[in-house]
Structures are given as structure tokens and as C-alpha cells.
Image 1: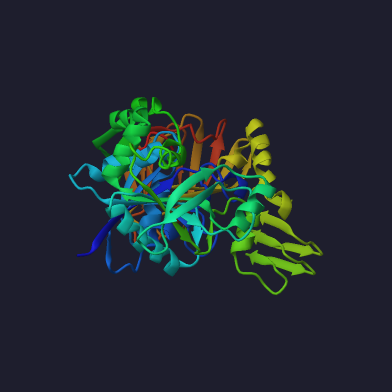
Image 2: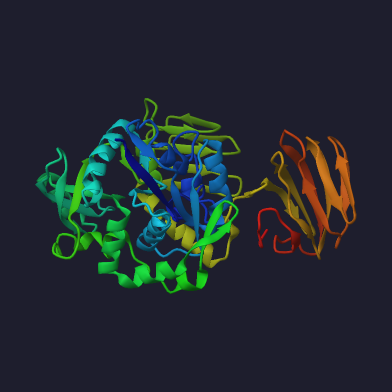
Length: 483
């Protein structure tokens, strides 16, 4: 009989240390940092090929802001899943508890594999071998975690010490969790040999987690039960009650439950840890990405239009312009349409302070890229000035913007590729390539793509105020209230 496994993917982080690529509205898990797939897509695909395990559609717990991008990224890799929207983050223990309530609602008690959406694992075979070991332990009622075999005295991770070996080869009891150490302590851990990095990945039967969180943090379970509404489905998404979830305490899976397993064996299920050597990284900063990616003979990692001369151990990413570097070593250069980062690799953790400063100044570069994704496609603000803005707009086949109007701006639309179906006041008509139309201020209007190829347009806005909040929405097929 085949085992069955339900992935739970936690996608709530913002990845500020990977600015300027990672932004509040488009964080690192949605970015293709390692190959053509995003980190989220790679997490979903990581279980492909497990022929002797039935992999159920994943449960993804994410911030409401990311819902349409995540749904589209699943579609692009041919996957479906249950996407649960958090109105705000409460850390991983409430997120897993909500996912467990969703998993058990149909009367089943599945094994859950909990994975952050923003990690990299390069040795998929080793990971899947560990999953095989873990599912046997989870079926026996254990709470399982995966510890990364350390190869450096890392001070940025928490550690887990393993104890007595279990009956399944390569699995152990959890001895204790320890906080992020100083360098000397980390070196001692590495030399001692029984300490593993805390990966943030877990496996357990759903009922076992719910019983454990009930014992350790009943207030979290009660708040999540009040917030979970199985019938609250918004298209492809499952919403939870905002008011009830606001009362939920925030805590991590480790602090809420896992750290108590070895100290309360009479009231909690047994804990197990599986050492894992699988090319794992949490890509916490740019230097970690440099370590992960393949390098040329000089230790350089490049992406995009980059020219290097006499450079060593340098990461250079270019999204839009030529980046030329001469005689720089151990440096990170990241170019985007609206920001450029230059940092020494030893200082990449300090990027978070740059982001904090930008937030204090209310700079938009912390929140979003110039290119903004929407459920219907995307737009790129290619030029702006006093009383005007120019956007490049791409509408996916079959997609439509909302029926809306603006109080402060008029719009001129020019079709570059494809065919647009335009609603303007009480008229609906087609606009073909190299044709244009004008939307006067205050006029209800809608843009649709009735064709089979992406619709590309140039939009010229003019008016006294050009902010995205100047929208009065009458109808929207995606159920949005915001833009």
C-alpha cells in the first residue's frame, strides 16, 4: 500500500536581505534565483518522482498580497493546490495549525510535510530519501524534523543536537534545540559532530500536530479554530476570519512545540530528527546565493548583461542594463530597473538596514518593483513626470481588468500587439494593433483580451493625480477591492 503525503508550504516571508530583487510585494520565494523556476515552484516540484508515495495537492499558506502570483506560478508548472490567505503574518505555528485544520476537515488524517517556500535544495535524491525515512516515523506518531549536516561554523542558524539512534537507519531522537551561537560555540558544535542546522522543515500526522499544539499552546489552536472557515472560498483561495486571526498569538513551530518534546516526554509525542545533506540553503542573503550558484573559473556568478574584467568571487546580476566591472573582488552588484545594490560579500547581512532606512523614508523601492504583477497580467511604469505617466501593459489571453473609473486622470491606450476589447461608458468595441482609443476622466471603462496571444499596450495617463488608489471599481472578475 502506497503512503500518502500532503505538502504544506509556508510562504509568508519577505526576504529583505535580497533587496533590491526581493520586495515586500514580490518577495524572494516568487523569484527565479537559481534557475528558470521560482523558489516556490521548486519547492512544489521537489516531491516529483516519488513513485511509491501519493503526493496530494499542496496546501500553501501565504500573505493575501501574493495570492494571484502564487496561483499563476502553480498553473505554469501544471500544479493545483489549496491556497490559504493570511490577512497578516503570525509566524509558522499558527500557519501550520491553519493548514492542519484545512487538511483534516474532510475526515482524513494525512501526513503533512511542512516546507518553507524560499529554500534551495540541490540534491533532490538525498532529500527524497530523507522523506521516505520521515514518513515511516510520522506514521508511527512521531513529530519529525530535518537537520542539515553543517559544513561551516555558521552563526546565523539555530542548531539541533541529536541523541539516541532510532530503529529506522539514519534517524535519531531529538536531544535539544539551541539558539544561534557565537563563532566559538559554532566551531565546537561542528567539531562535536552531533549538532545539525535547524532547517525549518517538519513532518507529522495532522492529528499529532493538533494534539501537540493543543497541549503546548492552546490559545493558538483556539484562535486558529475560530479563524478557520472551510466555507469561506474566494475563487481559488480560502480566506480566514481576519478578526479572529488578529487575536492569535504569534510563535514559531520550534518555540511553540518542538523545543518542548525532549523536556515533556510524558505529555507530548516523541520527536525525531533526520540528518540531511542535500545542498540545502535558506538563501538568507546575497553571499548565500553566491555560495549556492555555479561559478566560473574566477569564482564569479553572473546573470544578465554583465561584463567582468579581472574580477574574482563576485556576484553580478543585471535585469535591464549593461553592468561592467573592473578589478573588484568579493563584491555583490545587483541592478534592477529602479535600484542598484553594491556591497562587499562580508556585509550582505547589512542590506536589511538599507531597507529599514528606505522604509523610514517611505520610499516605494522597498514595497514593489517598477513592474507590477496583477491577476490579469502586469504593467511596467516606464516613464513618469509632472501630470503624466507612461505604462507598458500586458494582458493575458482571456483576462480582463476591472470595470472602473478615475476621478483625477484620463488615459490614452495604444495597442502594440494583439487585440483589445474596450468598454467605454455604454459602448464596447475592438482596438487592433497600431490603433488607439481615449478614455476621458470620469468615464467607466474596462480593458479585455479576447484573443489567444498576450495583449501588449502603451498607456499614457494624464491628470492631477496618478496614484493607483484613484480607482472606483464597479465589477471585477477576481473579486478584488484594491487595484
